[in-house]
Image 1 (cartoon, rainbow, N blue to C red):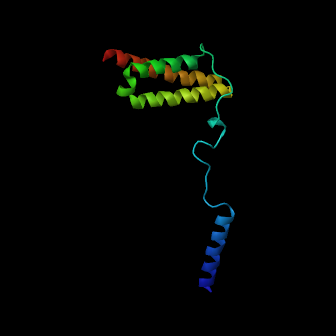
Image 2: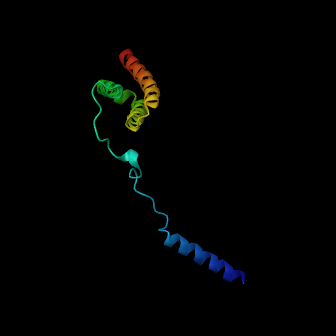
Image 3: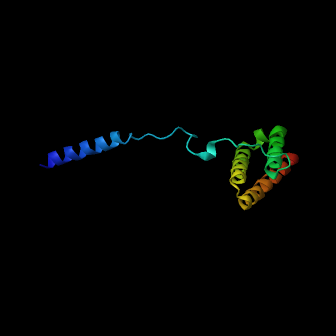
Length: 114
């Protein structure tokens, strides 16, 4: 009787798993609204755009060879700031940009000291 119960439990689990689509997930980066591009570009005088220009200049001046990990962190923070801006979270944008500006200042100072 216990053998029959275990077979029944396994069969039920297999049917539920296959009936619900198995263990499938959406493709990477295709899961939510945050992955869709913005509808409009940011103006050039926007603080996020200015920070992106500073990051591009640091990258161009050799920062990509000296600080690749730190540049990736700043790029992630800028992406967060852009998404917060599009979402209308102005206070969050301000807080994120404080961190971005501090990191960019540090990178510029290190780059000029070499």
